[in-house]
Image (cartoon, rainbow, N blue to C red):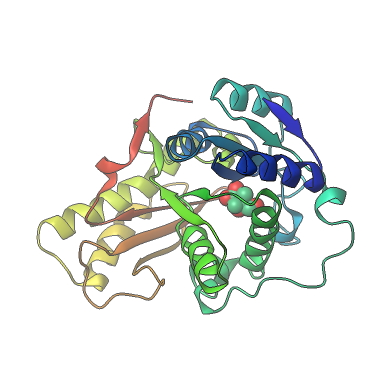
Length: 290
Ligand code: PAF
């Protein structure tokens, strides 16, 4: 596996691969890799000839009170996992390589960023889309793969690529869960024993909504109440549970394409999750404890 740190080298490698007729797939991450990221790599490998994985903890997407400083970082472990999974090129730029000057221009994410995570984390999605735009310009992939666990992010990236004519395909891969339902997230590392148990309330609440919908309930308010009853569990501070469409608009009636999005705090750790009602939690990928 090739290890690159500068945008110049990264772009040169990618261009050389494409000049040889090979397609390039890309998985952007902030490191602390887990099976969720590695399944994105598998997806990229199925679709393209060469796969790039980036590790960059992007300061622009963290608020002043958020966990930028303590975000888990272990590049040696990430390098080993990426190599074992068959990544061809690991791109690990530092802050100066990505932002040689304080960036003055940022991507304006528009109204889809004003709700849900965006309402709680002002400026977060401008930071995400700015770094994703930069990474896409550096790597110039044919396919970029994002996880559906970060549903709002995935929808915004897809919309940015479409609205701003990025010449690539954005693929969105299913959420990966532990066997008991907990969605994999780098932030799960913050959870102590009891907190990990409390965190199961998120997937249980999603399941409760899904079951109620499958039994014929389509009123979003009723479904929301059903989920909230489960989410209000010991140790869990619910943030939101909403039923939305792909543009993040609240739905009037739940149908198979409706997405139930959820966020809650477990102690100091904020977790998010979601389910597409017609697909169901059972269609997500389940892996044994990480
Ligand atoms: O999902 C993430 O890990 C980050 O938001 C991303 C897409 C790598 C941008 O920093």
